[in-house]
Amino acid sequence: MKDLDQHREDYLNQYKNRPYGRNLLRNQEDERLDAPNEECGIFGLYSEDNLDTFSLSQFGLFALQHRGQEACGISVANNGKIYNVKDEGLVLDVFKEIKDPETFMGNTVIGHTRYSTAGDKKKYNFQPFFAKNEYDQMVLSIAHNGNLTNAKKLKAELEAEGVVFRATSDSEVILRLIQKNLDLGLRGAIKATMEKIEGAYSVVGITRNKFFAFRDFHGIRPLVLGAIDEKTFVAASESCALDAVGAQYVRDILPGEIVYTSDNEKGLKSYMVKDDCKRKICSFEYIYFARPDSTMENINVHEIREKSGEKIWEQAPVKADMVIGVPDSGVPAAIGYSKASGIPFRPVLIKNRYIGRSFIVPTQEMRERIVNLKLNPIASEIKGKSIVIIDDSIVRGTTSKRLVKIMKEAGAKEIHFRSVSPPVIAPCYLGIDTPNKEDLIAANMTKEELRDYLDVDSLEFLSVENLIKILGSSDHCFGCFTEKYPVPKGDE
Image 1 (cartoon, rainbow, N blue to C red):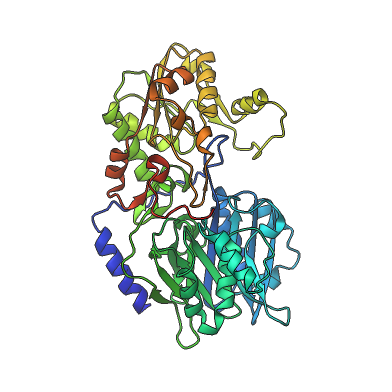
Image 2: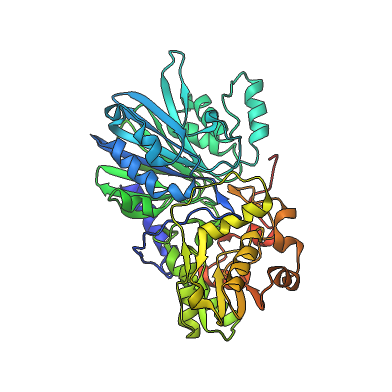
C-alpha cells in the first residue's frame, strides 16, 4: 500500500480545504422520464484470499443499480479461470438466474450495470466484455463506464490488422487494445491503451490471476478505491458501493492512474501514466446521477445538493408558503432552500417507488400522463398555497410542464420553479445519454419563453458561477452547460 498511500497523501493535500463527510441516506435516485441518463456503474474487488465474490459483487452492483437498469453482469477469476455471466434485467433478477453460484466464488470479481449510450441494446453489448486465447479460454475481462471519442477510428485500425469485434460498443475497443498489447505485460498493455484512446473512461478488469483499474486523464467519470482489510480492495463508480460490501473509502483513483496487482508483490500497486493530469470530473454527478450517500473527489453529494438549494435562494429569493423538492435528487436542495429562506419544506410530492422503468404507450399524451403515476401531490396541502418547486434540472421540459399542471390542478395559487443546475444547452458525448440539442428545451428557448411554456410565475436556474462556488473549484466538466468540454468530440 506504500505507493497508494503516497498518492492518497498528495491527493488529500490538494483537496484538504474541501468539504468532506458522509451522509448515510439510502435513497436511490430512479430514472426520471425526461432526465439525462448515466451510462453504467462498475465494480471490482480483489483479495489475496478466496471469498464470497458472488454475494459481494451482487451487493456492490445493487448499490449501483441507479446508474443502469438495462442489464448487468460479472466476471470472476476462480482457480486460474475466468467465468462470465451477463443478462438483461436488474441486478437481483440476473443473479437469481445463476444456478451455480459456487462457480463465481473466487478471489477477484468485476461487475457492470448498464445503461446504453454507445452501441445498440443487444446482448452482445452487455458487459463485462471478455477476450479468449487460441484455446478458447477467457484470459481478460473488463467493465467500462464512459464513452470513447475516437472509437470508430481505432476500431477501423484494429480491424485492418485482423482483429475481430463481437460487439458494437466502444468498450470493446479498450478490451482489444489491452489484449493486443499483453506482450508488454499487464501494466504496459494498459499504458499503451490509455495512450491511444480518447474520451471518458473508468475501467475495472481482470486477467486469470490479476486485477486492475484505471481512469482517463481528466477523471471525467468517477472511480473510487476502498479496502475491506489489508488483503481485500474494492474499486467502484461510487463510494456507496464500498459501503454496501463493508469497505472503507481510501481515496479516488486519480486521473491517469493505473492500480493493479503484480506477480511479485502482494497488495495493489499504483502507476501514473501522466503526472500532469487536470481533473475534470462530470459536475452532473453531483447534481443528479450519484447517490446522495456517495462521496466523490472528497465531496459529499448530499452536502452539495443542500448547498445548491441555499445558493439558489440567495440568487433568486421569492416569497412563498412552502418549498417542495422533486424526489429524489431535488429533495436535499429543497431542504437547503428552506434553511436559507425560512420557508417551510413540505414533502407533499409522493413518489411511487414501484413503478416500472417504462410503459409501452402509443401516444405522447399518455406518455406524459405517466408523470401522474410516478409523482402525485397531496392536494389538501397545496390548495391555495404559493409554492416553490425545486428540481435538479430541466432537460426536455416535458416532465416539468406536466408537474406544474398537476400542481395547478391540485389548487396551487402560485408556482415558482427553481432548477439547481444551470440550463442544459448541449448534449454530452462523454458517457451521458442527453438528447440532441434540438430536444434540449433551454437551448431553444429564452428563460422568459421557458417560463411561459411551463406556465409558472417565476423561473430561475442556478448559475454556472454559483455551481463552481458550491463545488469549490472549476476542476469539473461543465460541458452540458457551457458547450466547452475537456476532450474534443472526435469521430463519435
